Length: 93
Image (cartoon, rainbow, N blue to C red; front, side, top):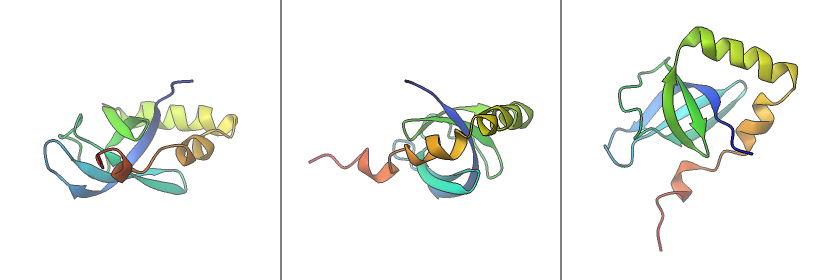
């Protein structure tokens, strides 16, 4: 199943145009995610993350509505645990 979940950008780690990474919070969990597709995101912005890659910014009200719906099904943190660490994506042997 392909599903993007909203998260809040809490800390930029690297703003390199190709390898941009930031810490993104999904409720109680935080993950390092790639943000090369949304380089304009700032601390406090919400982004939609799919497979460890932020694919778009999302309106904060829309993000909260999605949080409420995911929480109803107890899915938010379960989905966040499935996001791969960003470091694994660009480590090519």
